Every structure is written in structure tokens, then in C-alpha cells.
Length: 147
Image (cartoon, rainbow, N blue to C red):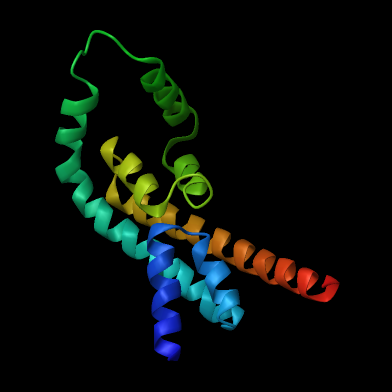
């Protein structure tokens, strides 16, 4: 039964990062285990979709850049965001704003190097996993005491 809890936290972290800490606390897992499962889930998505990024880049260009003479407002915003923050900025925002899959695809499509993607996403996953697991634990304990 414990294995199912671990696999659920791990799998959900692959798709929606915040679900790892929430489910880890819900299942009563120790914080270090929940942190490791959350990081592992996100990094599994990063590894898989970084590999698929090379395959997706030409398809993405066909869909979004049919008319190369005209940039849409959305394209301009993305280019501005990318130039300002780069791989590190998007990596840091991935657990909070993007999903692990979405952030990885976004970074892969623009052609970032794999070692950058892996290292920055691991850094981001580690920091945010610790913060969100501790915050979830504190939030849970606060509401448990007030009820």
C-alpha cells in the first residue's frame, strides 16, 4: 500500500508539480521522502520531454510560424520573456506557472542545450520542492490546529 502512495506522489509530480507536496502530506509521507518523490517526478518529465523537444521543434515552427513576416503579440511577449530571463528564468517559473511538461517543451523548442535544461530544471525542482513541501506542511498544521 505504501508503494501506491509513493507512485501516486511521483506520477502526479510529473504532470502538476504542486500535487507532489500536497499528496505527500495527504498520505502522511515524511517530508524528505515527499521532496525526493516530487523532484523525481518533475525530472522524469524533464528528461522525457527534452528528448522529444528535438522532434517537436520543426512541428512547432510549422504551426506557429506559418507567416514569418508577421509576429503576433503573443510571439513578441515570448521573445521578450526569453531574452530577459532565458533558460534559468523559465526553469524557475516552471513549477509555479508552467507544468513540468509545458516548461520543458517551451525551453526545448527554443533550442536550449540539454545540459542547461537538466541542470537548471534540477535546481528549480529542488528549491521549489523544499519550499512547497515545507509550506504545505505548515499550512496543513496551521489549519489542523485551528479546526
